[in-house]
Image (cartoon, rainbow, N blue to C red; front, side, top):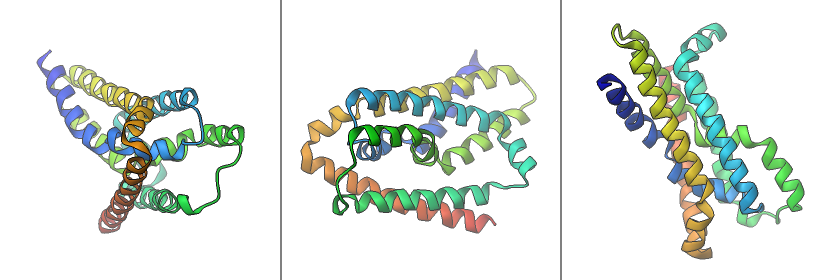
Amino acid sequence: MYHIISTFLESLTLLLPIVNPLGTSPIFYSLTSATTSKFRAILARRIAIYGLIIMVVCMLFGSQILNALGLTIAPVRIAGGLILIAVGWNLLHQNNASNKNEKHLSDEILRKRTFSPLTLPITTGPGTIAVTLAFGAKVADSKDFLLEEYIGALLGISVVAISIYLCYRFVDRLMSALGEVGSEVIVSLSAFILLCISVQIICSGYSAL
């Protein structure tokens, strides 16, 4: 039980600040502003499930998949950073763009983009992948209590996925409390921070090449 609890706390401490669902929820809200709260809840559930799958697969099989493809984490970081730059840039300039298309079309587009880019790389991006890969390798290298450590890690990942769902599911209440001006300020700041993080991810990936 001690190993389960310690690994659970370690995985939660490592992943929650990297995933940062509270910080990315304004970006999610901005990208889904044309839809309804009910459909946004559906998207939040799907993103949480996809994020859970990504983190679990990366922890259990990430190193093997990258090795099979002849890849390292560096190009994954660079590619993810480039996608994040495109998303952040569009968010910063969306107020100058023409209004959204019809709601039905918007919902269809969002449904298709639930995995990419809403889940990967906006919610669980290169940083999350790198952390789960490293943490999975650490657990695999452990000689004792392997099953208990995997259970603890999976519990930690599950809590992170639940936090993604809760932050995204109820983000409209947070943005309503902030008001229209406050929401625009938060979205703009989040988009700028996303751009800064993207540049940092690309630089770290380039340095690792």
